[in-house]
Image (cartoon, rainbow, N blue to C red; front, side, top):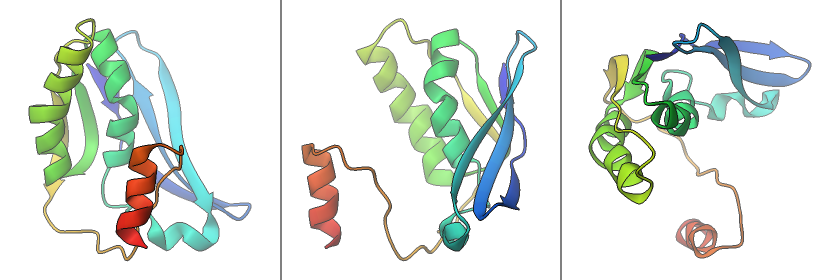
Length: 134
């Protein structure tokens, strides 16, 4: 089983960093982190481990290891990943194994953010996101 340890938050050198240690059945432990400039720290939902689970999902499926997050996940995220995303990825790429994502709890309420952050690839999804929000 692949495990993602409880995340911790670090503020240093003008950066807000959210970090968690990922461990696999091979005994390796590696840090995984996301960072933003410190002035955007309030935009980060520090209650959940959703971002870590999303980042490691493909790797866990490739290795055929269930993924356990030692932090709560948002209820909708957990439900949709287990019931739709994993089966869809497996159907699209059969070498990916069907696994189970679990967490220490679920978060049922919304983060309450007032904006949307996204990358921009120049594709239809990127343009649609901008169109929907501007």
